[in-house]
Amino acid sequence: MDEATLTERGQISVPAALRKAMNLLPGQRLKFAPVSDHEFRVITQNNAPLGPIAMLGYARKLRAGPARRTSEWMSELREGEAP
Image (cartoon, rainbow, N blue to C red; front, top):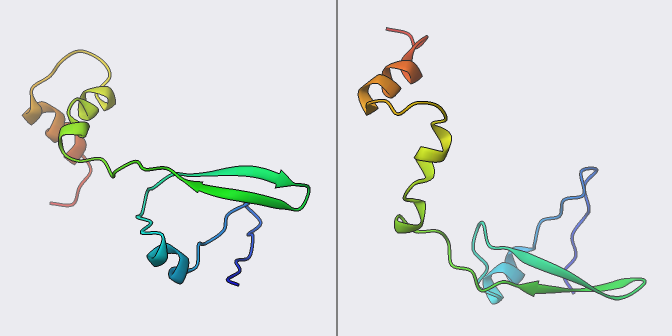
């Protein structure tokens, strides 16, 4: 039986053998369902990683305020970079 250690922040790492056996991918969501006082079931979500189409409009959410040209936005982001 594989085991993991709970960190101070409440995090665990899923052992590699289990990740491979269950085809778990980075970013994939897991649900924890209590079974008893000392046991829970981990349920994998069949959510595929986000692709490029799913990311459309994401940058717009980050750019709060009036609409600007991309070159203006990039200039603002680059302020303070070493020449």
